[in-house]
Image 1 (tube, rainbow, N blue to C red):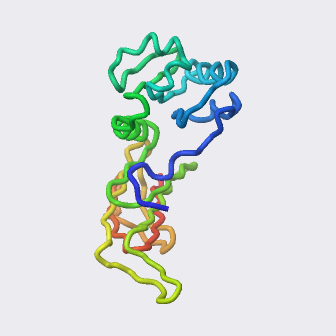
Image 2 (cartoon, rainbow, N blue to C red; image 1 turned 45 degrees about the horizontal axis):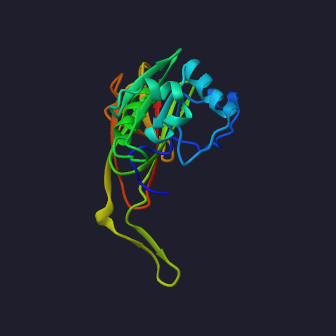
Image 3 (cartoon, rainbow, N blue to C red; image 1 turned 135 degrees about the horizontal axis):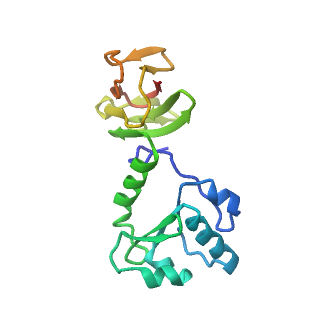
Length: 205
């Protein structure tokens, strides 16, 4: 459990995941050093053609000859295939340009932006979006001396909703506290997270 800019937004799948499982995700990142079978490669191509977004490092292009042929040589290149997109980044096994691509995809796929140093999770349900914030910094536990809090690790975190819904209210669920000014369509709130703090914020529509 660590604070990070991407939140807990990814699952780890095996390379032989079924077509049904692949198609349930809006964006996939091929990672590791896979040796895909022809059948597995075909599933990833089908995923893209049906509207998915596949992020490919240049090291994986030999597995996809058509994408290798279409690649311009510029990291971040977009290749359209059917209804979907392949985004190629590189050089081989380098992650230097992946940060911007991931943030772009998160902004496209999630109606929430979290600014500040915190671990976060986003859950979307009918009528609301729930954002869980966790500050993992500054909390230490030693089996002999017990817990220790470094109060200098308190973080200010801003959560912004940029979806199409009309926000009726923002509240913190654990304390049942309304946040912000209570104005209609308020789309942003800022909270302080002390070391070890957890806050669960709900945007209600």
